[in-house]
Structures are given as structure tokens and as C-alpha cells.
Length: 45
Length: 242
Image (cartoon, rainbow over all chains, first blue to last red; front, side, top):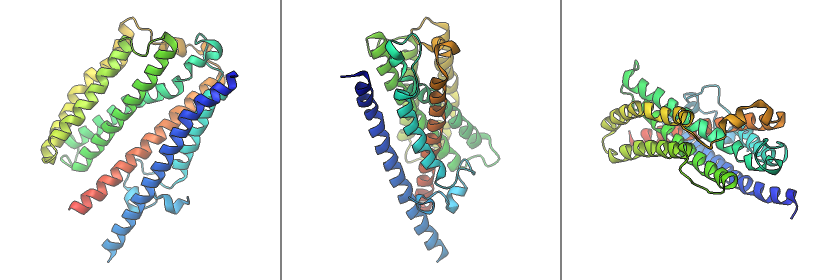
């Protein structure tokens, strides 16, 4: 395997991990936003 | 993912720890910056001198150093809110205690990341993943200090006021050993830790510095994002319980 191929393989570990973490954080962020919106609507009522 | 959907523009967020950090732009920015850092660590930065062929052995530094510095910064943020809780104008406000606890939890997380990435670096550079170097020992004790804080809070779960008081005092008391272990121990004892090698400007190229500084920014944004998420969760829980 060439040096570049090895680097791509090693890089894929933090990259895939980060993409997973990022997607999860966005999911939590949106879920919280929905809950906050629900609370706000209840408060307004 | 639109700005309105990602969620930071609500009334709750405007009370957040960093008021200008509203909207989704900086969260998307953090994601993109981290992707740049991951790509740059392997394909843009040329590596540091003295770390094997192509400087490959020093590439863990892009993830290790920002994590280690943030582990220390988180402690200061935790201390800041602990002081506000104990001595601020509105002393006794449990939200300040929650902010302090959130910082400590994130500090534990970044400290763990620094330990793991440091161990990977040690394994590649020195041939063993753990050899009780003073720097390795000091970060493990720092990790234990964080863990003790979290265990203390867990033990007093049903008593919020007592938990807040004791954990704030613990954070203050542990500040001196924590800072001593992070900053002083590796400088007064012989260590393999390559701080001085990497601090020498001639050992790293400009592209190395660009990726490293971008990494600092990306990790800081990640810390702020995580902090906000935890704080928003706390506020929702408090509101539902109250």
C-alpha cells in the first residue's frame, strides 16, 4: 500500500467518527429546539 | 438544515453563555472546520521535524493539543461559575452551579480525549502506549480529579443546594493541584513529552500551524456547542420539574 492510501485509511477513522458525532449533535439540537418551541407555545396559551 | 430548524435562535438561547453565538451558522462552521482539520492533519500539514518519516508521528498533535488545552480551560470556566455561585450578586443560583457542572463534565470529556490521543501518540512515537511518563501521570491524576468531582455530585443527587455548595468548594480546592499537574509537573521533571520540540517555530511549517490553529478554533466551537446543548437541556428539565 502506498503512503497516501495508508493516510486515507487512517484519516477515515476520525472523519467517520466526527461525521457521526456531528449528525448526532444536530439531531439533539433540533430535538431540543422542538421541545423549547412546545414549551413556549404552552406558556403563551 | 435551515437556520430556523437547527434551533439556536430561540428565546432560551439568547440567555446562553455566549450571547452572540446564536443561529446555526457557527455550528455548521464548527462542523466544516473540523472536517478541514481532519483532512488537513493528513494531507495539508507537512508534519513536524523529528517525528519520523514525513513527520507522520506528530499528526495526532492536531487533536491532542486542543483537547488537552480545552481540558484546562473547562476547569477555569467551571471555577468561574463556581465563584459566581458562591460569591456572586445572585449567589446560590442553581443555574450557575449547573453551568459549573457542565464545564466540569466537558472538561472530563476533553481530558479523556487528550489521554487517549496522547496514548496513541506515545504508542507510535515511543513504541509503548503507556509508560508512566510525568506528563502521562499528571493527566491521569487530572482525569481522576474531574471524576471525583462528578462522583461527588452523583452522591448528592437528591440534595441540590448541598451538592452545589460542596462541588463548588471542591472545584476551588482542586484548582491548585489541577493546574500544578497540568502546567508545572511536566516542566520541573524530565519528560519525553515533546512540548519544547513543537514550540520551536523552525520544527513546524506554516501549513502545520494553520491546521493546528484551526483545530483550536474548531474544538473551542465544539465546546461552546456542547455547553449550550447541556444548558438548554438543564433549563427544560428545570422548567418541567418546577
